[in-house]
Length: 215
Image (cartoon, rainbow, N blue to C red; front, side):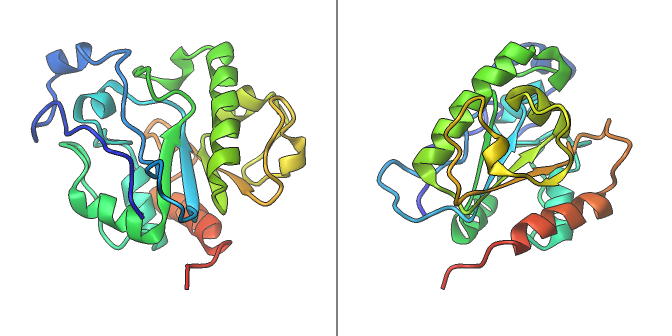
């Protein structure tokens, strides 16, 4: 699978300082999505909430050292390598994403904040509209939203729980393809005290094992 071009880390391989991070508040991060001429279907599309300033500073998703996203993907068996994205995303990770047909985006990729709750519900609802259009275009086998609170706010589904969702309930905005599985997994941020790497890994494995590898 070929991905759309992404920028290198603005920090050129260095970790950002506290002073650096101030300059990346409200900055954007590049998605990991198929190139326009790519016809292979994604097996899993991961949807985060929005980037942190650290993520924007190194142009790598879930890059803050305290975030448990990468350790939990490794623990789940989805990835074969334990990733340190704090200085940027290694080429080996992008290659494994491509080989395994994994994509990654956010409800709001263009606005970095220190905490997801700095976003308004209106911003999340607008992000949900973008995600539905993207899913209708790409038709991934599954979509995993990382964050139950953001999912509820984005789609107006206040009673939603973690796990596999009913796509028919996604009607604001409408248009979710019936053949695309929709999952919600916990927010992997270190401030989520309800989960640990082991429990997060189990939930990622459940999503991953619900679809089949190509060939």
